[in-house]
Image 1 (cartoon, protein in one colour):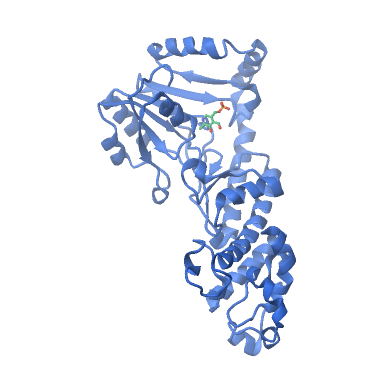
Image 2 (cartoon, rainbow, N blue to C red):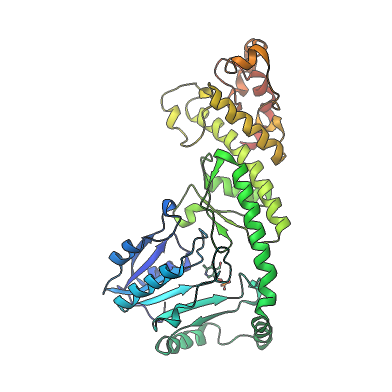
Length: 397
Ligand SMILES: Cc1ncc(COP(=O)(O)O)c(C=O)c1O
């Protein structure tokens, strides 16, 4: 980009997108035109919208498929259409194929340079080859672009270590051997992740990635995803990139390319944290509402969190029950969650599940101070639960 772009040039970029792919053009002073990747289109770009954005003023189009952070990719006809739009405009097509070899539902896409002379394709040993430490990648570009690239590189790295080049050459010569186990691992992890997402029920939504090793799920009941990700790193040793880095604050980027046992352990920790976060979210909601049930503003205090004083019908009870089951699977103590382990009810209680137990209703007033953290339905049905919750929830908050 430093070699080909000048201040004021128009550059069409996907949004969201891996940061370096747009911020260098932004720093040069180019005009960035964003082509949105929408959730309801499975994060595949709308090529009619692209046709309207790409025109004679477009100097460069920057895309990345398989896509970081969403895990979306194009079909061959969609790729051909994008190439056609670039050619019509005479624009450079920067094709970042860092995850190019990692596809699940189709063959890897061809190098666009085979069809269009102004395509610039980038690849790396860091992803599917599993060798990020070698710091080696490649760029296929027309000669008119390669010459200025080489000049800039002279100032930056001059050249690679011959030892690294030797290793890289061996890897490329044996690419199938190196790639096969990693592709199997990524496919297995993707299935593990899909099962995990299913188990999260209402807590997480996603578009299943079709390629690459990134997913971009939405955390439905976490009030502050940035803070949640910071807590995950500090308290659970789990790194999850908050979606705000990509302009999507309710999402997280979840990488699933690692060793399967580590991915499974990471998901287990994340599941436990999500269950807790939705409890803490409720507590914060209640606090923001001045600690009062039904206080003005309570319903909008923390968007997307369930309000405990509204858990009053059978559907909500089912939600609470499934949360306890999930907590059990995730290894979260029911005391931490703020509820008793679930036991099937029978007789009158089963017929009127929204009514709390008589013993709970007779709860002493001094227990009121731990009310905020509980999951109690209206009517005091969860007083015992609230008492159990007080200590651990306090620390979690
Ligand atoms: C989309 C994309 N492009 C390029 C890169 C750069 O990879 P590397 O510098 O390790 O070759 C990354 C790394 O995460 C990436 O996600």
